[in-house]
Image 1 (cartoon, rainbow, N blue to C red):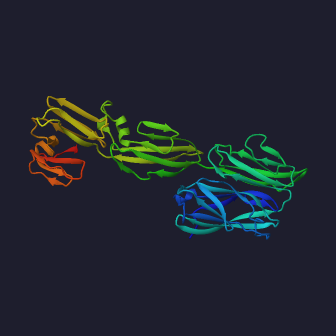
Image 2: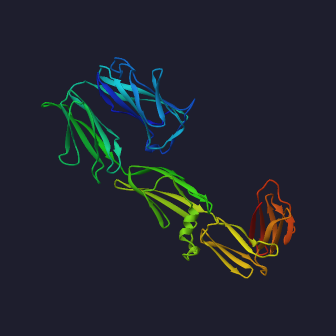
Image 3: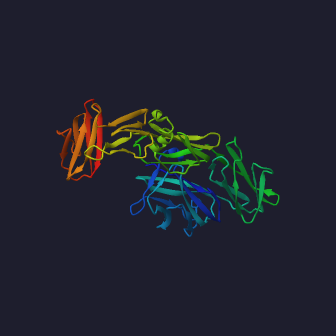
Length: 454
């Protein structure tokens, strides 16, 4: 099977007969488009790194007498039977664009020039794969090795340019965007680093050139190119349109790379440089804009779209999180007492701001403005002979008791129990439940419900 991660060493060249630090980078490429699950514990995932040891041209190090330095959390790297084994201390997810890095410190490079290949055996996310990474060994004569970490950045983002030289008195780095365009580093020490940028809003690349000098003698110049790219959104969750309740809380999460700033916009709101995850209630957001006070509840859409825009080099990256909001539910509209006095009503969610209640003498007209440009009307009255009503519903003497009007059928749940005493009656409380629901169908075909907590 093929490998899932892309492997590289920084640097990918070393001087012979030297002691070097090498950084292994394992990347889940952005182009993969999917996350990698890395399991911890016994029988979990691992990456085995095998350095060729010996004195031959194809060997890299003269011995395994070197250490592991910094390792990306929550990963660890341990020498086991001649292999460096990378494992995780907890289950983790490697998203597109994310990396695992392991530093190998004070690696004793042997004395033979040539190309050496470090073997990588990968046991990750249910797959098994093998690859190798080339490291070139060059003569320890006047020269310079230069590398960038990382090679790719976003607009005006920095990379660390690093070099190591041999047999030099100084190293000159040219290609800087600002005058005089070059910097000189005295040697020894024979290694150093500097923060660099592309330094342009229009050019995508900048090439830096390193040259080692010994008096008037110079090495062959070595070039390295830094690239800046437009922003990219690597992860968005949820990825598809969601259908949610009117009072349902949702979590929006994302990951982006190479951006300089971002904004999340929805309806009439926005957040500059929002943090992921974002907790929100799409239904509440609807009624912040469309409500009774604003006199526009009739125009409430049924969808809230959260648009994330990440700005950066040349162009922006955008994605939408779309939530379709289900209708508000009537909990009950009834009288508190069996003599049909004291009006009560409740809706779910209770904080829905697009609801109108018009009271008259012993009567109520309730209007719930719903997502999607619709509205539901409910009535409670002693005199109404048209509209379906569950006028009273409660527990009396340990049984359920109700009074209704203008219904042709009545059902009790749980159990989908058909009630014959529609206008007025009682029923034992269904066992093993904390909530009962009466649902009536009116003579006019409309439905009314009443929910009772036991």
